Image (cartoon, rainbow, N blue to C red; front, side, top):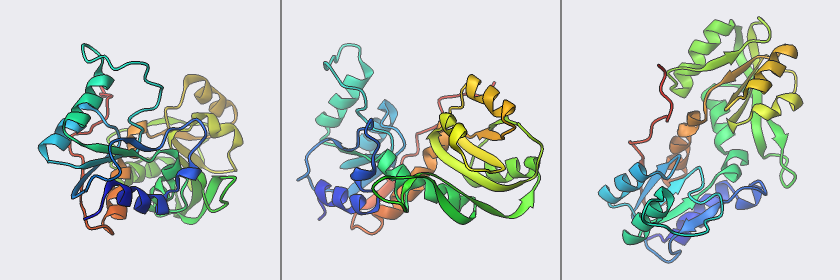
Length: 258
């Protein structure tokens, strides 16, 4: 039976932790490398709801995209701190947690590559090459099979990424052929983009949006939760191991469209 270490080493072949950004925190967040694993839950974020789901489904290991522990934890306060209580629940139920974040974003067959393929882009290239591996890096860009209108592209994007809504910054009214994307928070990268018809990312700020209009660039804010597709990717990776890999069913965007 595989151990936590076996799962970690297997995933590391696809998304080496050396590819993680310096500011990031990836790898084993909590648990025991020697624990045996029969059931894995893959998720975007390790929330209280996700941990309760894991307990209910008798999960041995959670594999998340966003790190369980990102900022330093100075104390564990079980009275009123939600993060402390998430950690407490995990320890009480002997559930380990592995988080693969920017290393998975950048990997040659990682999340951004997966998103580009979901859009069926051709001639896919790395947007910002990694210093350690020119086949890896943040973001991807490529071409649609055929040029389409902006309105038609929005419909196509929402269908492919399973999104109910998006926000658009329209700097020009050209049809769409070349597409760049960067999962997560990528608004600040607009200043270094190659020439493309549209840029897809999440968490686009007000001033970035204003600048995009001045530069006549199109941005579609697909929201940070668009990275929920990482669950499909992680599940695919884990099918090669003798473990049962389940996708979290309780996650949803924290934002409501009113």
